[in-house]
Image (cartoon, rainbow, N blue to C red; front, top):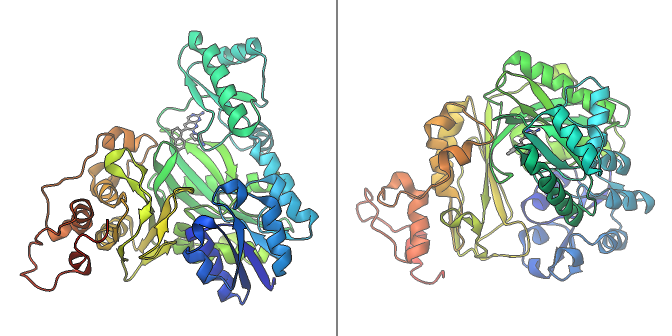
Length: 495
Ligand code: MV4
């Protein structure tokens, strides 16, 4: 096993990776930028290397600086976390050339799966259903329009180098095709440096169900079941859970086998995610492969008992996968809520700033993967994720109850968070009924506003939210003038 690992990331995921390294006796090296001099991931590592200015290109996206930091500190391997360089074939390739182990798939696999048309070809050959459409990118507008007619409107115009929602257009009518294809191509060119586009049939009201896969260098591959990720807004996931309320045991088995077939067909090594869209008829279609550890991996860990980062380290070190598919079980139900520094009353716009006070939920079945502490200033330069709250309980109903309880306990003052919004989503009838479709937020919560009149203890999270806005603690019903909560004693000092 490695003696020292560099973690090329920040925030909650850097700390998450460090935790497992520590449990395995592996020394850790953090990297940080000017904006992260006081960030929690820096303290928790055994060593830390300063990269440079806050801009990602000078810090967490700077391949040369990160490679140099690994060499200087004697790290043998680099864990990229998610985002930043996690799915960069150039970065994985540089690690390979420099004799450092990239904790992820080989650069060739990242490159091939990063091109969505190559991925579609590979997956089609393995017999897994792909969404009807084109298997290669095309730039000739006449040929593209002919393909659109063949597929049938509405069609999805997608960037070959895209994924996660960028460079995508739905085209409903032939007369709109040309303009949409041009603008999608231009957007893809500027976002990915590659303007290639291809077409797919549009699936109506799908669910997003993804399978966690893991494969070793010896051709062994298993899946660790699914995650339901349909609850999102503008391609940003908000709530993830497992098991998916949409899967039957039979469908789960077929989708799991398909996910493993994708892993085998692509020569996959390490942990990855095979995304599917599931339609109303119970038919599923391959969407894309994410070649990284995902934000939502903890729900898989809670229900399978597997430490995903430990698996990644074992596989990267060249060990054989010890897991067997028929030994893996899903136990209970897990839900994750992403806690961002964003204002749910202002269109979820970023809300950076100093966290002046914080109280974290605790108790049975609760996990809080956090990158913050009271006193930390959330930088404006990066993805504003503060933490992920994960709960585990026996069933879906009890997990929802536990999550609502935990969200109500969670106090973060100084920045705005979506906690009151999340509580309302979890309490809503459609969520409780398992109506998890990709249009859920749009359909049920597009004009959400907090319920300001309800000021009882049951909406504690909302109350503290109000306090941070109005800077004067409201009377708390039912506390009979007992001790004020710490945040009630802060007066006006937090803003
Ligand atoms: C689709 C689709 C319907 N039909 N492709 C959005 C993100 C990107 N990874 C793929 N996406 C979609 N592709 C076809 N042919 C609907 C979506 C989609 C979506 C997918 C997953 C989660 C949320 C979504 C929200 C809107 C659209």
